[in-house]
Length: 297
Image 1: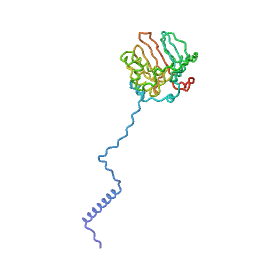
Image 2: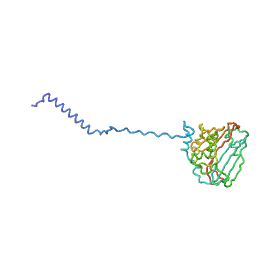
Image 3: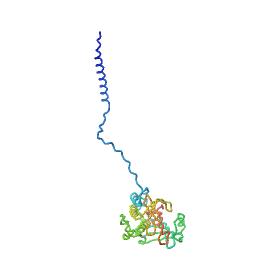
């Protein structure tokens, strides 16, 4: 005959067996669960921050000086920057210039060598009486119909605006463009602006020289930025104004290459108000002879 356990013993047995099952389950869980790393005191991984957007000279909220300095720092090279070893510097200009009470309109193509020799071909459209004139795109075909005149220059007779090389230091260049002793005079900003124009319309400025000229221009007292505009052939540029000594000079500068596209000055003082000058730079570069021009822009 089988003997049954006492009730108290049966309860104790169930408790012991149940505890064993739980202990076994816990051991199995500990043996299969992946170990957890200790993260105590470990800093959170840094989230990479996005790079700040690159600023350009056309961005909003910049002063004229900031725009010109930024352009000087970031300007692009041109095809002409790669041909500086060719013997002739070529420039193609169209100008409107005051002569007493008349506006003289001239198209000039100039080839110049380093020895001051070269060749110029000019076409002159009919003069305009009076000086209250604003050049217009419909005047440009007049140059194509004008009779060309060729001028050949012997060595030493065709001079650049400044001797080469153009200084790389903006302060030195500024002293050559306008006398330093006139720095406090009302006419000084006008002289500096005119010097920058004269330099760009007389000789080709390569990448570094354009940057230096822009830094000189950026420091002209009272210079303002008035937004983008187009020149007579439809090229878009940044417009900068210099008002001083009874005149306002406007320079239109390519926002990528820093090249001067066009410039004009109007008189508003005691002298007869109206146009003083307008210059349009159509092409610049280098070529192998005094006949073949680089392609116009």
